[in-house]
Image (cartoon, rainbow, N blue to C red):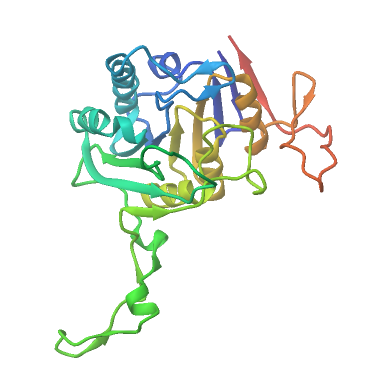
Length: 287
């Protein structure tokens, strides 16, 4: 297992179950966990197939890492979990056995083309918002306000009040979120089959953590949760098993510009010419 750290941001290169079972991350030390695990739907993660022998086997695996994540959360901590629509029901049950589910969020998006010809294609993914203690947890409503169309656009007046007032122009988002999926031509694009939008993660991090808090992502992928944490002045811990995805994290978190002699840069576009060999501050511990 390798550990890369800048002090504020730490990456563990290894299997999530093994890292979570170790003492690298202290129990009851994490303010916010965002878990976006493999969905068991057949995606190919650099030769690691996202497919278990059965739904029961997949749920057993989910149970193992959930138990370890719960142990890492502070008593006031929050956990967000994503899954496939096909696994919504069993994952919901597994979460309710361990935590309080406050919201079941629908992340919906547009389609780039025909998704299905013999059934209705899926254009959404579930996000569970869970907490350890439903009476004591972080939720920064003012940090995530969005436009309230009734008040802001239609300018309706609420005559039910003793003194009529216009409807609010801002509100806390509901549980249906629209964010476009990350496309190749977007600046944030990385080579990964299930990259999540930075704006989506910034909403989660802003809502459920405070400046200086620690955000843990056990399935880091493109390290979007850690990048959102950095943008919002939180600390982060990330776990990633794949070396190619690890290199994305080293670059996005500005922990290194080189890895094993390879220059780290995002996929080249027409306006890019490569990257410099200038080194960044990097602490590497090997075991």
